Length: 91
Image 1 (cartoon, rainbow, N blue to C red):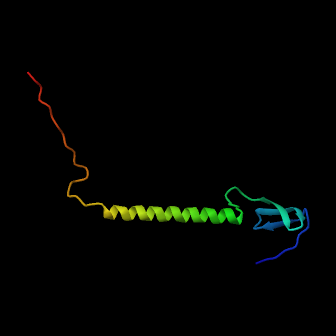
Image 2: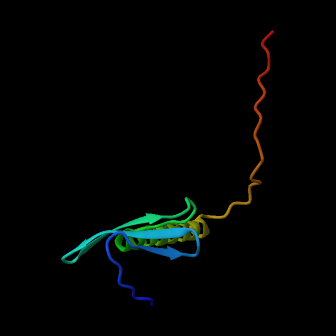
Image 3: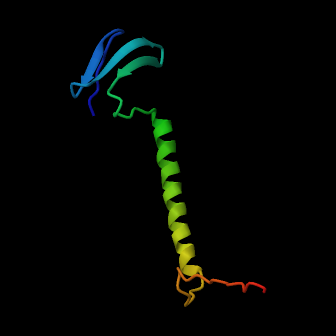
């Protein structure tokens, strides 16, 4: 882990395309601005953890649904078999 001290207005550059600017620092708060390409996702830690948790729950639900298919009774019917009913024209 890299630990840096920065003053208001100073910047940190990451990988030539991410720029972090210290906007304001007082007491226990620090305001920063992050300038990054659109394809770089930037989250607060608590939001990131919530997203990961939701994604995991979604994956678990899909796994549970696939297990339900195994519980369904198996039939010998052909899946694409159609029944055609013909009506006789009255004369």
